[in-house]
Amino acid sequence: MKSMLRILLVSAAFGMGILPAAAEDGAKVTPVMSKDLQDYPGKEALMLSVEYEPGASSPSHRHDAHAFVYVLEGAIVMQVEGGEEVTVGPGETYYENPSDIHLVSRNASTTDRAKFVVVLLKNKDVPAVIPLK
Image (cartoon, rainbow, N blue to C red; front, side):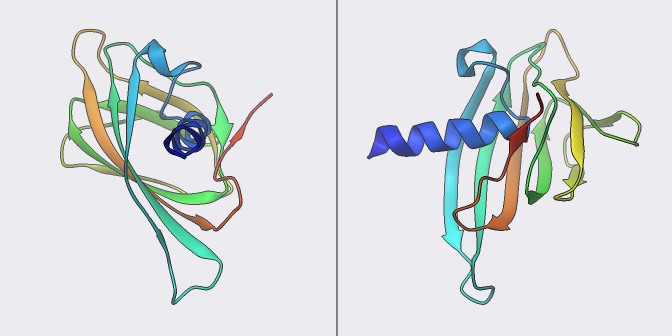
């Protein structure tokens, strides 16, 4: 069961843009919690803690979820289609809506790690992420 949960969380994190192509390529994703939202039938929240090693990045993707990002340390660079690159530092936030195409997600530094928390609000039992082909 733990293996299945790990596979699901790593898959979600990869498509969300918080993991590079392989989990061992510089990102550590730790599930914090998952909760059905009883006041919103069919919806759930998923919280992840993410650490990017220096220089880590993720491929372009989109996800079927509201994504709320809060940076704890270091800095990350984010960009959605039609927007400019934004560098988000400690204590700052970033938001993606379900229709955004996430073009850039990377550690802003090649020497320091970045750590952030991601909260996804999404439809239950529906993938939160869709990697671009």
